[in-house]
Image 1 (cartoon, protein in one colour):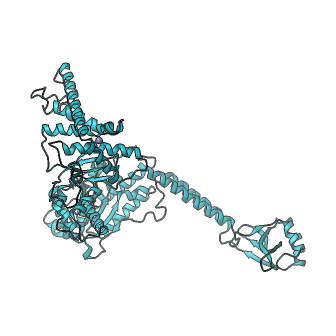
Image 2 (cartoon, helix red, strand yellow):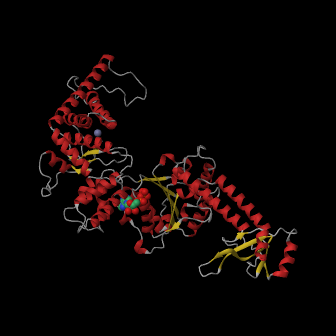
Image 3 (cartoon, helix red, strand yellow):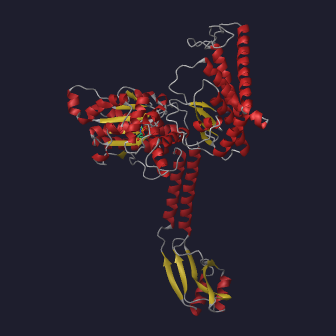
Length: 636
Ligand code: ADP
Ligand code: ZN
């Protein structure tokens, strides 16, 4: 909503500006330059009497304001320039029509030289009044009906869709630019065949959809795919975004929509691509902002009318993209409209590798750079994220003056993309920083010292998102199955943050709330779900059934319930005491680590391990591949 406030401010500024210009147009005569002093009749007479008036005097009859006045220069009384000449000032005396005009005339005509100047205003007052009125009405209308935003005041009705086929064949995007989303690519193959040769396709009896909806998370290559379809078929590609329509007058969005389609029909076969269709195609609940809903509805209706209005065989194919198909108005999805959906998923491991290879073609790598490993370390990354990762890595390696992108830089770039820009928040006090350093050191120490844990990947006290610091671990490979011992260690690691704070600083902070919740959760799941506690046998105590929506009573007694609570409690406190013992025994290491963190802010898992094991953090021991990165674990 910040955007809305901003654009309201902008519209007010525009209005103020227009009014300001009008007022000055109205009042000012072309050369009433700023330094002219309005003088009284008395001063004027005085200047004449003392001979300070510079000849000739100009008499101005200004048609635009209806005023008559004298203007010219007079010498200042007694004020001299450095060279001895008197200082001058510009003056202007306005005459009240009919009162002193005649007197002045007589007086001046006999004593001084008067030049007459008539100013025809370039806008007559009457027309100016009408203009102001019209503009005010326009502004009022604009204020009442515009959707948030002050842009697009001019040039409405013009089609904003960009035609993107004029780049020449060398810049054309084809399927070879799309990687890792083979299924989606196959699904749209048929469209290409049709666009290439509509006549043949029709003869063979193929049915072609008018509209295709590409559904998938941002950055997965929906736009890319649409462009590639056009590129493969060598047809024009019109692109626009639903959000373009957000800042428009009632009626403007609709007329723009009509423009796009009439243009597209002229250039058929072709593709019309509408990104972010959800911003015009929301469900019409009527609950939108005043005026806004109405404008959206018009745009949406126009689009539907246009789509219904042409025959599928005409060769205009509308491709729309969204990541929120559930919010779309059902009218959009009816037969003859966007009745074909193609899902564009986040890439799998194989897909990620292909995308990295594709975008990596233009980049020089050092021999140790392993894109396969990057692919394994980037679950959940979109194609755009991966392209971004490689781009960042290339920039970083230029900055580091490397010969090529190496593995370390790839790792850094991955973290950068993963976490977004490292945010050094202003509200992060030195005290909070210290608490965070001890807290994370506590986690990291246990992560390294305990058996049955994932390798430590990285520790940082740079706040990111809502976490003040993070201790990250990375499992060796994709983990589908966890063991009891793993959970026991995990619970202890959770406790480490709070314990370190208390041990060193003598007080505890709220920073551990996530850890506490996590430890409790692990214990409860071990007892209830996995039968991993010593007290209970091979038995499940899961309360809610996945198969029924109703709240049926738990399948065990109150007494059992109390026993479960007691067992969870004893497991958590055992973990806490155990963790405390380890940390107390390794207090020196903890202190060393926390100090290193305060100094370096971010430490690599391997460096932390070396520090804890008492090895010198020497650069020579770059182990070949100590961590197989697959998925992301985190203990904040
Ligand atoms: P979307 O429209 O789904 O938000 P885009 O098509 O705009 O995503 O993707 C942005 C950029 O990310 C592309 O221009 C391309 O560089 C890269 N990209 C995304 N997905 C892929 C993919 N599957 N193959 C190759 N590059 C991709
Ligand atoms: Zn923590």
